[in-house]
Amino acid sequence: MAWDSALGSIIEVAITLAGFSGIVAAMGRRGAGQWSSADQLLLRILLMSSGVAILFAFLPFILIDMLESSLMWRLLSGVLVLWLIALAIIRMRQAAALGIRRVYGLHYLYFVCLTLVLISLLAFNAIWLGSPSLYLLGVLWQVTIAFVTFVTMLLNSWRKGPRAVTTPAPPTD
Image (cartoon, rainbow, N blue to C red; front, side, top):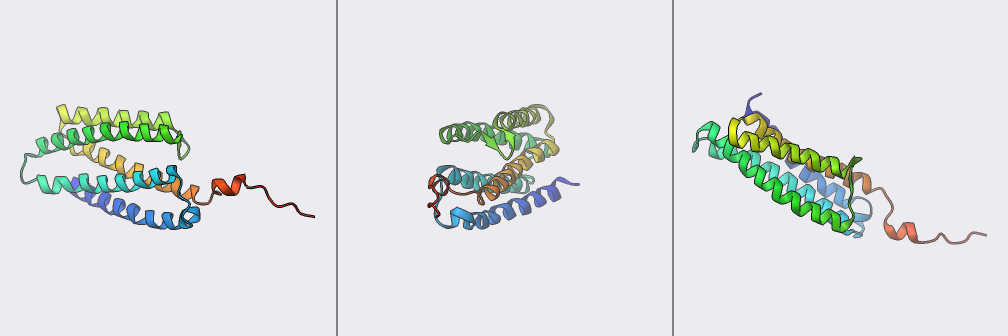
């Protein structure tokens, strides 16, 4: 598969995930206006990951005529590395402040380790290889983050809100 068709597919999936966020937002306690701080953070992660995937998937189409191919993949991989590092620091602080430790069954540490492996691969690509495949992997990671966040929000939308759990049931006679 050529990089252009792969990036086109990523764009379509990212747009779809961003669109489905509205459905998730309307479901469950969120539809009733009971948004927790964690719910709000998850929605921001979903929308940001989808938007970034779209942006980074479009950039090669814009830059391909301006730069030599290998240089373009190196440059874009380097920019993606910087983005992932900055965003990882911000999101880890936000998640720690809100007490989010698990993401859809994966332990938080595993998720961070996968991100570090990806950052290493992208850095290697930026310095030595200049391969479109590793860059595609980085953009696909953004879609993966959006998908995992979408599924997490969807599964959480059916759980009872904190008020429903702590309110005692009325006595029955």
